[in-house]
Image (cartoon, rainbow over all chains, first blue to last red; front, side, top):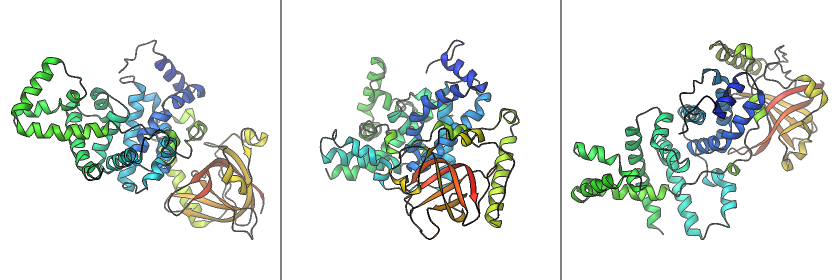
Amino acid sequence: MARVVPDDPEKVLVQAARRGDEEAFREIYRTYREPVWSVVLSLVGDPLQAQDILQNVFFKAFRGLPRFRFRSALFTWIYRIARNECRNHLRKHGPSVVPLEDILGSRYEADTASVADDGSRNRRDALTGAVMQLPFKMREVVVLKYQEDLSYDEMSRILGCPSGTVASRLNRALTELETLMRPSEGTR
Amino acid sequence: MNILCFFLRRKFVPYLDGGLRPGQAGRLEKHLAGCRECGGLIVRIRAGHQAARRFDRLSPDASPRLPEFEEIWARRPSPSRLSPALAVPALLAVAAGLVMLVAVSSRTMTSHSREGLVASHDIQAGREFTPLAIREFAMNSRSRIVTEGFVHNVYYDEQERTLHIKLVEGLQDPEPFVICEIRDVRGLTIPQQGSRVRVYGMARFDAQPGRGWNEVNPVMNIAVLNR
């Protein structure tokens, strides 16, 4: 993870945002909107709920910027807010039961040309469905590792637990995923 | 499982990623050759790992629309209220109370606060808001819109915990309609049933099961044209 140094453009941006510079806030939103959206959607599963959570994440991030101490990269801090928002949302409302095509709808359409055959598409359906079935703590490590390509250290900072715990949790998530994937893999 | 297994298992995924140094990888492989439990476990983890590597980042296109920056910016507290930690929760609690009050009484109310709203001069000048008839929502691609119609009814949505106004083109015509969702009533005039109103806000489509309607969400301002 990039270390924040005094001349870091990110620090300059955050300081401008703290002074109320709308353009700085806009730049932060422009930079992190899509990665945060991707994580939130993968964690809650419902695009409409994800939209509301995304708004809350950035609302809270903007509101909380004066308390940001540069102890981590800005994206780590925003991801942590996003993760907490998703967890709180799911605690209140329970997991969403949303048809897979509603979650991935247009991506499926866009991917149609690139997907070699129905078999690979079915495997992707099964995989996404399996990830959505994982308990929240397992799902989030899978999303952060395989979707966001984060290191154990980065995940550890976001999740607020030691990297050894991240590793153990990831092992459990992968064995669970293997179990969940087994029936559909077997039908190929 | 002994203590060696415990620590080596934490290296399984880095090993599968090819991220271990040759010496570390060699020690792990030697252990796997002699430990049936770890050997069985890594087979399962490898299968899960290979599957998970196909788990792509979901494209933003998977959403009908990502929120615009302005939607979040409009919700920000004023700078003078940023510092006290309790000010924002207190404001939110007051706003929630106001919503409940409106839902119960269903009467017209006006707050003097302007916070969270589009500046009135913006609205008066009509800047940035694209005029959109209710019947045009289905084909719309603009986010910041202004629309006009008659208030069919006003109700409190228990599920969303927000105040909803159903807007129609004519009071005798139930369709087409658009639902105007008010997240924060502060500074808004809540119109009465039958009023003709002009609503400013963000256009979106609600695809939740059982819905499938167009919305102005959030409503940024309402002008009551007549009652």
